[in-house]
Length: 167
Image (cartoon, rainbow, N blue to C red):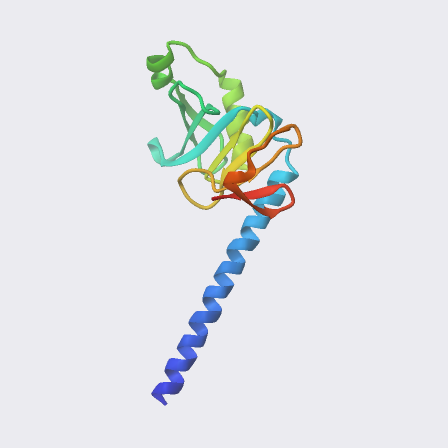
């Protein structure tokens, strides 16, 4: 009886882990499809990532130029209706002495980013898209744009269509 119970638990664990992996892959494919069907032009040459909770239980994001040398803007959004609660540029002014993005551009960019359901999203000047969909950290996936005539694919392995996993 104990052997049967252990066997059942072992099989349940195996099936559960496979289901979780398929669910993650399914979620990834949904995220990629959403990105593919979205006009990301407003996000060109930007980097946006979720950093946690901000003041008054808001969601906090960093917004920066892609590979920018200045500090990022800290943007707080309300959880309920995803409206901008605060745009903090104090670190931007300390590092670069001037704003490099307008509040309108930040609002447009973060609002679009929030619809994509990723932790990190970066786009370069060619329109290549770099994402980390499931956790904080560097990009784990890249979509190569047709505008990039010399993509360096040595750091990537093909996932599907024009999407690649970063090695």
